[in-house]
Length: 369
Image (tube, rainbow, N blue to C red; front, side):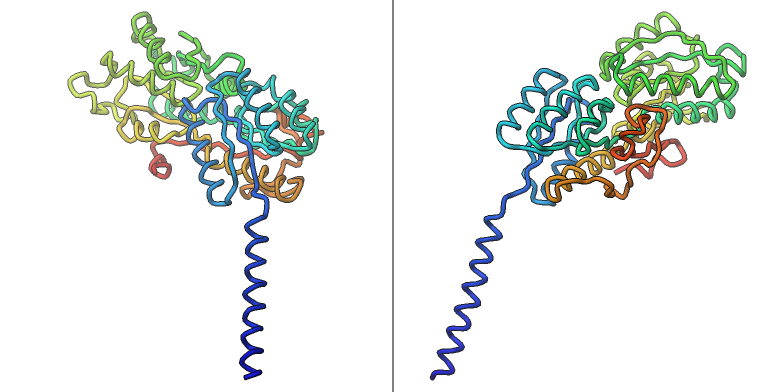
């Protein structure tokens, strides 16, 4: 009887300890991460936000995601609200580079940190504290890849140069928001890349469409009316605008065979008379490639950027710092590159660069979900 009573008491003690442990576990403070997102109306940004939500769910993180719809003043208000709620660690896709130093100063005043992503922070923002990081892709590389794709295209299809000069390209450029780091670096790099490849670059028309397909379509409509037959290529800073141009060209019948706009008559990889290039490799863009419309794009890796930024923020929230650690399998830079902010030796150890990748007719199916 005594033996049975002893066993019974032992069981009660174990159960009580387990219950107490469970209470302690359930009482642990949940990790909270703020996410300041510039505008999910843009497909890439929407994809990025979806990745953050998925990662937060997997980690049991309370993700406070705020979409500022392209409004910098609203984004700062959203930050102030989250700071007042005690949120210390962030993923930040800022509306502008210029605001990032202010954002970093506000977060640092609360003893927190952030991973800036997609939109490059300023050097000053990263210098606020070692707990501020860059988790993005070097924008100039996207432009360099566009130039490489076009060089290969025109070498394989010299007859597609409208002016008959194999060393000259007549191009239409559709820009994102003027002065935006992606607009500046991507544009400069593709133009310089074509010149470095030995081409004389003639800009037939150029203007901003502010990353928006409808604005790009309207611009392309006007340019077609003015410059039909006078340009060799349409180069856009992102897929949304590239697809807007594609829609304009299709609607106008600017295709190999107006009687069958689905037919690539000359076998150059697009049903359009000219190739159209974008950046991002969104699923809509890759599907357009599969249909022979958009010619090529460049993968800006939403999964890679969002995961790198999230892991940095999570390490700060759980370990106090992410300095020197790997995120998404990436190590921080060890030496400067040409593009800000990673061109400053003082902050290269805070910079994690997610690579761009060419998406062409040879490999686009690898990027289809």
